[in-house]
Length: 399
Image (cartoon, rainbow, N blue to C red):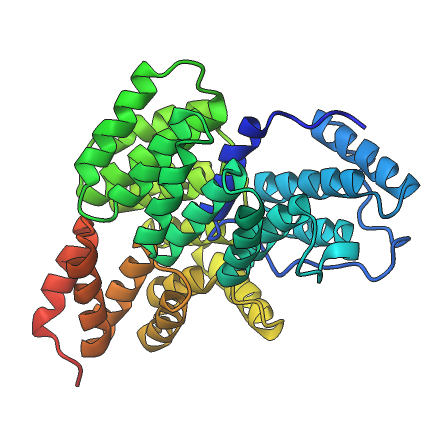
């Protein structure tokens, strides 16, 4: 078996997995095979290095069932592909690779780290944090666990706990990861410009920053600029795309900025080749609708069928996207508000607050608007679109 890559090469990938739940499980909850002999997928037509490596790892694991190192190497490869390709089936394959330890509360540390990544991808954030907590009891300076837990806690809006993990991370990881970790928290707690300045300074002064780390940092800078209305967002998105043009989370974030800028025609070529990924199809539909294109209705029907199918399976990973769909494409603000509230109970990123604010404003729901204003006041979040929407809705109380 090939030696695993250095831990630092995985840190950014793992952190991006944690923050990109809205893009990850592209279609459904992962399928977990019931039989080790079951054919999962024919890969003969895929001859890229990562798929050749995957086939080698599959063969190695099959030749030694129950071998921890081979099983975790295979699971890690499946997780990487799941997030690179936006294909949740590979999360199921990863879970299958870890089957001997999946339900073990005292599983080996490598299993716990991988299991936490799969769980957070399914929005089981508490389960992920619990697994990472066990890891950090054993290894208090496990950099992967610290960065992943900090990121998950940031998604949950638990900023004090997240900052504590970032602080310990300073003793275990290169400086760029610590700067990104802290900037992600500062940017949503009233220190957006400070976060942007510190992260930009790190990018310009620190040496040996790999492409994945640079893409992650530039995406963070772009999102901060988007929220506060800074025109620098364009340059940061461009830099991030240059570093990693296939990052699905980045493509979604850039599409959202383009939509806010009224650059609808620019969205379509960005996402048109990613129609396997429902959140990006949503951006496609929003752009098509704004341009009054005749293919809008076909996109709406496809999205509705997919969301209905996901609901029927009990898969609720894409509540945020479904809420946006119902509000802007489905023309059903009441349903959008229900979904936005359900989503807010699970994750509390700026995008989650925005759809809650938009749905609350559309329905005139005073309680939901109060939730939005309270969060803005308590956290100091600087998000122009949300602030303006909440202010505009002040004179539109619930009937």
